[in-house]
Length: 488
Image: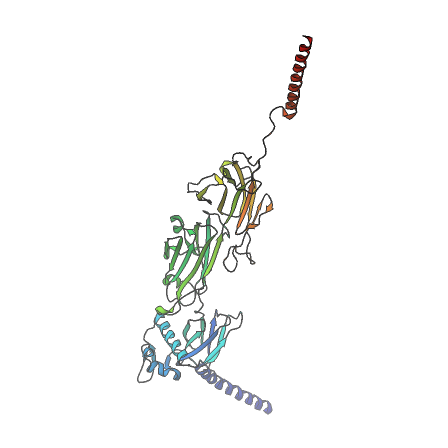
């Protein structure tokens, strides 16, 4: 029994010792070296650094900040650094002169520049791996930290007391573009989508500039621009401008900073608009977005440019005789149906020897005169070329000529243009026979035939009989006359 009491006494003493020591140990750890920063939404393969600007004395309720020894020179001697903080002369306590978000970002911007220029050592540094989206800094001395990345912008300021959670604010905004067609006839409507994402900290407006070559927007289309995040359209909160001139038109969309700040980093919007194809061979669009990655005017930068090209096609109609001599005087019509009904006859704007597909609003001509002419501004598809009248002395074609234009795309199957921006030749067939290029053109030869004069009515056989008969009659008359002379 006495032995048991001794064992219990030793055990109780050990427990009391552990209970008394452990809180002191935990409290000391929390107060000094148990800070933790978790960075969410980190970018892969980027370097993150944590700088301790101010040391922190924290009792669970009260905060006491003093300048960290690595930053004394910046905050007490540097011209810009001195304007950012108030330092109590008695106890060194630090407060910010501007506690607004803009003021804090201004502090971070200048501190980051100072750290890079003076090789200030980060307390912690980590480079994310592929697909890694979270960074955790542990065992940090308590303090007020600035965290930066090498993505080109600032990250954040916050206090470890002992833990803080941050979100990547340097994520760059992105923008791209696509069209609902890879080829379009002259006058067709092309619908465009421009997806873009919100980046990290918003320093200013986003300005989207879409430069169009060979495309025009009607007044109705200008009023129909949408900028949606899901079902929410923010177009009315933005400034939308359209300018035109010399075939190169521009859509400029300004999204105010105060609108963007309502959305978190990575939020996706889609800008949509429609335009009319107004060019042959190709229509070209280039879009980019201007934004700021810092508070200064010189911090303006742009996203990489995204380009979309839409093609259309052309071919040459060459009217010849059997000797390949060009014939004038023929008239053709181009139709979209095999029966070549009048309502499906296409109209064109004629300029010299070129016939460009007319828009619905244009007063085009239906008759195509050949010779040798170029028909242009066509989308890929099936067409029927019917000869309305042939040159004098020649017979017109009995049946229309079937012409098929097939678009060919790049290796990715995304565009009718190669990686250098050159239009890829289509495949063109005439009555199911493939047409090869003649120089730089697809030439469709339409041959008319003629012949010698046909025999006159009755045929040559009857004429011969008439001639022979006449000779026989003449001979008979001569014989009769000779006989009469003999009788006398």
